[in-house]
Amino acid sequence: MQGILIPISMVPGNSPIHKLNPIPKLVWSVGVLAVSFATRNIAVLGIMFVVGLILVMFAQIGKPYLKVVSILFPVSFTLITLQAIAPAFPQPWTPIVGLGPFTIYQEGIYSGVSLLLRVMSMTTFAMVTIMTSHPSDIFTSLQNLGMPYILNFIFTMTLQLIPILQSEFSIVLNAQKSRAMKGSGFSAILPSMIPVFAGAIERVQQLSISLESRAFGSSGVKTSFRNVSMTLKDYVVLVAGFLVMGYLTYYVVAEKVALDWSRTMVF
Image (cartoon, rainbow, N blue to C red; front, side, top):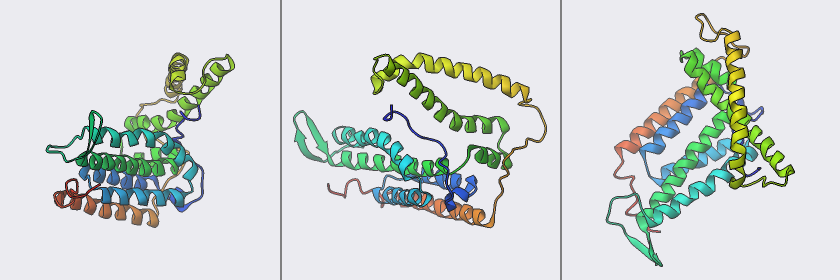
């Protein structure tokens, strides 16, 4: 089961990134998302990935981050293999070498590497935001920006339910293992689906009762037990995020032809 769990939840810490307001971190994450989809240049994507790794080390969340990457990286790495033999790229393709019935193409390798770096850069910045921000702080910060209360609740509950469902999967798989059933690997997930989803439905019913007892959806000012405010440091990081990511998005779009190295880089 350890190979299935993805620890997508806050990691307690006292780093400067933990102390930042969630809004600047969300702005940087959205900016990386925009740049990643706006370019396929592996240098730009690689630099963002390296910057994300530096933030991971600075926030001291390397161990839980590696658990996520250890699961996502093999899946993402298959993109290179699939793209190499069947490029999602306009023809003509430049063949490099033939392997039996398959042919490895230059454009396919480039496309696979760019997709891999795109996924890893977006994932890294997203994990930095999630693992260094308390869900209630994200909820309160978005509420202060005027985000609709219901949408805000859906977004925050999604972040909170992921580790809960993972924990229930772990309990069910351990129970299967104690009964001499397979308790690890993807083949063990199928028998555990029914009890996990049954527990999820029961949890949703309890949540709906709890929300009704607290007058969820009623008008009036909503309060939070956690006070979140923007400091000067948060505003500086926020403005820097808008400027850097805004300019970088404009640059990769304006220089789209010059930044396309797919037919000039040789592997």
